[in-house]
Image (tube, rainbow, N blue to C red):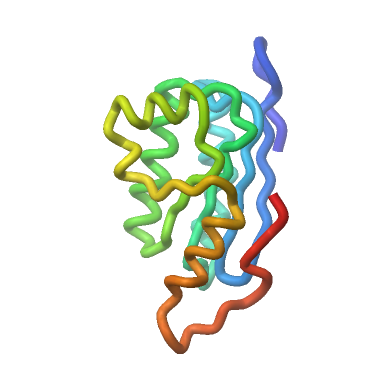
Length: 139
């Protein structure tokens, strides 16, 4: 999915499935123009049967405004309602600072990169529930 804002870089999203986890990679600027694109992209993700974890990789997000942050909070609320573990990875720069200042850093489970998040989800998997697929994608 591609969204061309009037300024800055294009906002792109891609998704990959790793067993019962999905990694959504975002790149560009997550702002008032692109937040609806993220919401639309996550729609089918929430409908994925058997999904236990969702990792949103933000390592290539250059900017995030309050609307983008609100979309991440909405994703957190949807994940809690759906019983899906939401993890963020690659949080850096302004987004990291904003999450800290607002106290939201404690609300999100944050990992350095998607592979670390998937390994943690796999390690925390309840006994008797098999892991499907490779839990450690390349960054």
